[in-house]
Image (tube, rainbow, N blue to C red; front, side, top):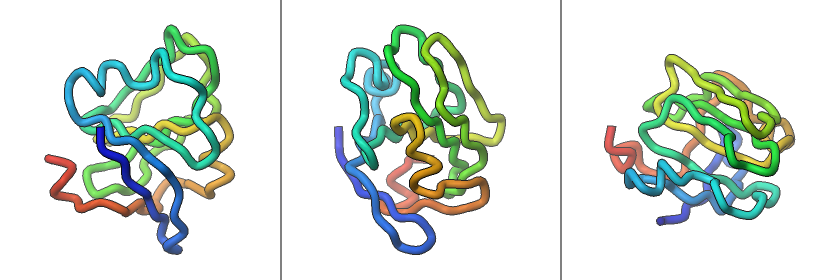
Length: 120
């Protein structure tokens, strides 16, 4: 699984962010993993919904469109819950409270990788 650093529109970087690209990596997600540290995340490609069944901690779920624009932020999603976004193409999972701490809001664009690497 490759790791990237993401940037917001002000060029402020955060990470490391692991990128789940294969079917197995996307299916596994954060299941069985330790709680994410501040700024750390998991970017799940080709994903418009997530669940937290089997997880032991809350996460923030940031839904991105194909160009990396934030479409929805599901804050502090508790274990055994689901979240989705119709216009979401990819999902960034962060530790609970990190979306707000990083200032991630709908309409902002995240960068740090080439769009064509997303394999639209």
